[in-house]
Length: 416
Image 1 (cartoon, rainbow, N blue to C red):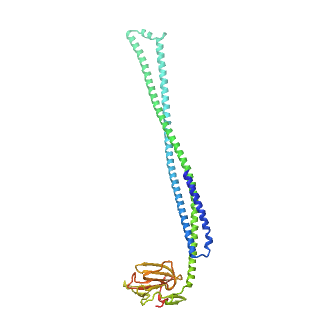
Image 2: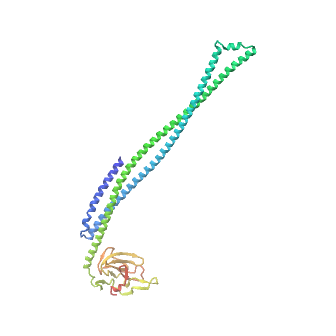
Image 3: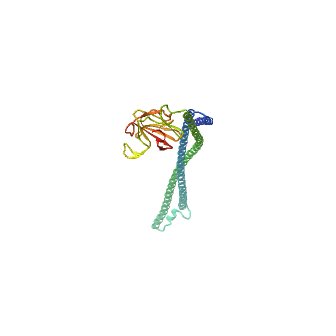
């Protein structure tokens, strides 16, 4: 009962959370279409992601409950199968004992018939014996003494006496044999009846055990029905939670799209206000102004194939090398958003800027950089300082330009 109340409380709490979640999700239609700043939209995204995280936690918890409930159901089904097997075995044993009891009943009936026959024969012989003795002892045509005294001689007398004794002894032996036979049959019958009683007792015990197993099976059936009902309730809640989770994920996608649009709008607004820093060397190509990224003193390596100064093999050079003293400031050639500000063994400390019109510029071998990923920079803004980190033989700036992912000659865009 306590567990059932706990489940009901959990279900009620979860339903309340889902209702609140639905209200929050429904409000998305209001702010998705609103002209909000990227920061405001990002705040909304963060809130929705937190809500999504909570929803995913609820989904996970519900899945755990569904699985746990399913495990219980499987255990009960397995237990029911064992009970059914035990009931079947007990039923077979009861049937076997019943057959044995019936066989013993038949044997007892046979023994009773033998006993009745023996008793009847004994009674018949006993009556005949008594009748003969009585007839010989009574007066009349034939008496015991007349038989003796009518003998012709002493020898005849002895013969007659011996005959009478033998007849009496034979009758007595026959009676005793019949009596012993009757006792033997009666003893066998008593043994069979005792065996039958023992079998009936065993059968009663098996039937009692079978009855108890039937009760256990009925209880298992009842519990299984309750678990099935609980599982259906959990599944409904899980389906609803998953639907909310999918809906929230979709709304987050819309918000992120709105965020990207807002960032683009803000960047274009910002870009329109940006001009190259005063004193920087610039060049305009297709209406776009490019700033020389460093005040170099020597143009050390052009764009294209060359002998690598370190590895000594013939390979493609994806930019231009502009030599300058270590610590010379490096500026952004155009305004844009920093995508990378990091280090690797080949490029050293380097910065990559996405100009959001298909162009990307990269600045390699810095002593260090002073910008961070996600930051917007203006054309001519200092982003780092000239160095010789990575695969470099001396202080210089490796400057490269990419258009739609393909390296192009920077000389087309900057004055070198």
